[in-house]
Image (cartoon, rainbow, N blue to C red):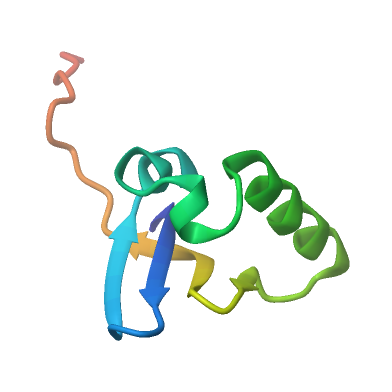
Length: 84
């Protein structure tokens, strides 16, 4: 089973959920001023929580951002067959 990271953004006042493949893609769509945290600060926050073995969650008055793992089925798509 393959694992991939996923970033979940929950905007608290509108109750909207958005999902991203990385913190960088989150900040491509939303500005740091809007989320009330910079990309570097968010990455540092997640790193500190990971070292402590805690859930990767950032929350402020505007939003909640979670980093988790999504499990995907491995695929052979795009792989070349080897002749034996």
